Image (cartoon, rainbow, N blue to C red; front, side):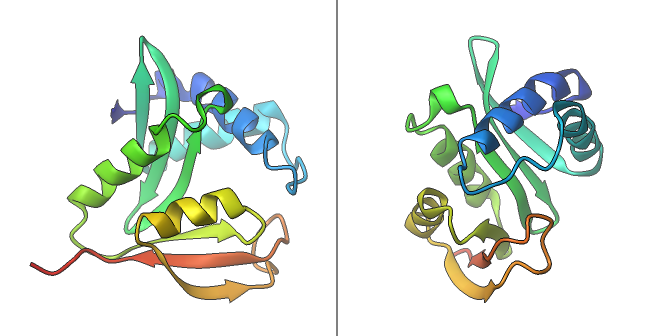
Amino acid sequence: MRPATLVDAAEIAVLFTASRATLTFLLQLHTADEDAAFIRGLIRDATVIVAESDGEIWGFVAVQGDEIEHLYVRPDRFRRGVGAVMLTALLERAVRPIELWCFQANEVARRFYEKHGFIVIKTTDGSHNEERLPDIRYRWAPTPE
């Protein structure tokens, strides 16, 4: 794992687009070029960490403050523990609670986050998100020592 740079933006954007395409409940709202511009902005404005092997990016996680904004894995690397490695590394360094949004329809992601100790703190009808899909707010808190 390492910090992403703008040099990585094109590869991350392809991964992002491909991974979101596997979420059959999502409509495609943006073009590949818009996704690439979004990822460039994300790298500039957030902390983006990539998981890579043999020079290829397998996944990325983007964090702003105490919020996980995005966590995606390349579809051909699903179910290989890439997401768990990224999330675990992030949580091991966390000193404050971390929150994230997840679509209610994304049952795989919901099980993943709940398995890693995230709890539901809010559900919505999706009226505040771009996709207009019901979502869930999750929170994870470090264990006090």
